[in-house]
Length: 168
Image (tube, helix red, strand yellow):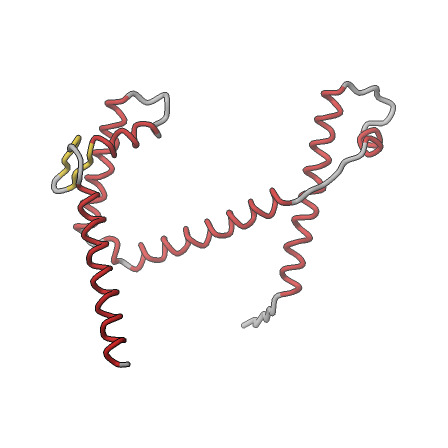
């Protein structure tokens, strides 16, 4: 039985090494478009980057920004900024903010509300409304309802959580 575990571990390690070698070879495969120190950006990679560039930026300006970015990354790594505590704290803060924003966005988009014509007319009494005006009012009322549901969701989360406040 022990031999099976050793063989299994050997197989897993071999697979990982082989996969890493394949991944690494694929990364440098292709015709170089830009070489920045030891970093190679292939024509394929550059083409993908250019496809994502803003339309108001011309090609040469964009390529220069790619080069500048890579040079700065290399310099920062050389100075070992990525190992500094302030960098790690900043990454942690950005990570947490991103998690919160994604969660809030998903929750807000999942909220479904209905706004009746009666509610619309109640919000604009004594006024004949066009279809466009009705839709604008409907959207405003829906947003208000969503915000209310969203605030209630946060209140519920706080009530469901185990929270202790210890003042000093």
